Image (tube, rainbow, N blue to C red; front, side):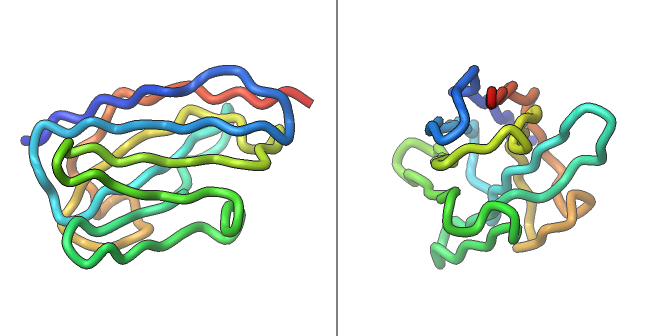
Amino acid sequence: QVQLVESGGGLVQAGGSLRLSCAASGRRYVMGWFRQAPGKEREFVAAITWGAISTRYADSVKGRFTVSRDNAKNTVYLQMNSLKPEDTAIYYCAAGPFHSSDSNEYDNWGQGTQVTVSS
């Protein structure tokens, strides 16, 4: 079981930037970011593989968000630029064996970090 701890959330104005971090206690093949806004289902944001450095993004964040990782620190990052009010959500880090956008494919989850974008 891999423990995941997110950090870096907060309040930012529209157009601003935040960087989320996810520290993992071990290494899994894929690390993903998901988010859940009030009254909405959890949705995929981005994912990255540890070995091949392959990434994938939701259409809604392409060109604005960048996922990266530091293998030496077992840490994954989500750099979020040009933030919009609709990006407001709790952001979760997840780990799993498949490079997927399906939350059911991930079996380790962090506690989440709140991101609020004001207009």
